[in-house]
Amino acid sequence: MAKILVSQITFPPPNFGYSTISKEKIVLRWLLDWIDTCLKTGELHFGDFLPDKFKLAKYLNVSAGTLQNAIRQAESMGYFESRQSVGTLIKNPNDSHKIYEKAFSKKDKAISLIKKIIIDSNLKIGEKLPSVKVLVQRIGLGENTIRIALEELVSNNTLSVCLLKRNKCCWIYNLPISNDNLKFQDMDLVSAVAKKIKDYIVNNCQIGDKIPSNSIFAKMFNVSIRTVNEATKTLNEQKIILSRRGRYGTIYLNSPQKIKKQKEREEKSLFMSRSKGEVLQENYLYSWEKTLDALKKYIIQNHESGDKIPSMRELANILNVSTNTIKHAISIMCEDGYLIAQRGKYGGVFILEMPQKDTETFTWLALNPDVVKIKQK
Image 1: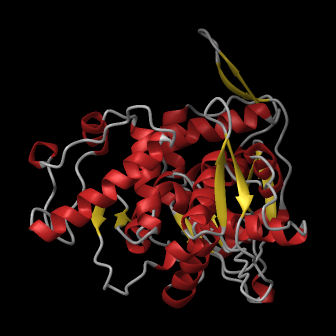
Image 2: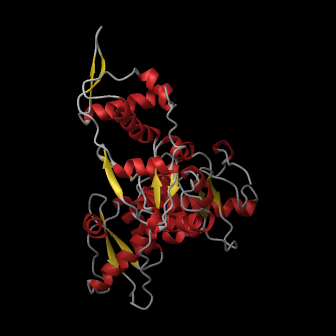
């Protein structure tokens, strides 16, 4: 297993000339001929990785996009296998191993949906398919994905391509498709990865645990970070997990919980009823959320309306948190109209209105006295 260098390629680049077929098709033929010929001569071996795609595209005198589309078609024919963050390798056709996610790619979903459109439209052999733009609107996938799916159907003779003027083409229904052999797969790559992440955390995590990072899941399931991000977004919407910024990470929730809106974004509620057997975890809260309630309690117990509260440094020492956390909590209370900050010699932070007592808040704090330690003066 080695990385192929462009300088090592002895196979001559393709001659585009005045060919009537597209550059993608010419590059695809070149890739297949190059692999077949050099595997026989021993210049290439199964498991070797393709050169950098930009350098290979320059050698072939085509764009990186054209090369990428040709590689994708060759991959669907079993010549290559792409591995996330590693590269594209020459695949051994006798290797029966299949990456799980490949069965749920967008291309495969597009192929199934195109077949479904052909059957639902009662298209006859020899009739034209709708244009790519129409298919994009009806299927809801990208134009490039649709084109790759059409090329795949052409390669297995389900469709044939008819060249029109100005390098345009249309696709003709070529071989019959029956409902019996139509396997419509409604689960795309993101859904498949979301299912795998859900299965993993259900089998390996307890409610309230912080689950592995998205980068770890990407390596675990051999997909991109972007795919994992989309998958975790789905699980967040299902309330199976709760993603939070920074060191708080993503937490396993398992079942829907009460959600409250905080500063134009949804956050996990501070409170979960112990009577219902739900688990209360400190991990659900940002530091400023814990501090905000503790600060309200401190103000109610020690001050009156109009009083000037201690400085941020003093409050940080009293509540045993950082000054940045205190600053955030005070800014929230200023926005809510409880406090007002004034500059100058006689400035400071003053109480405009006493915070309202939240019985549930203090019940929660009473049950969790170690979450925020309040030092007595």
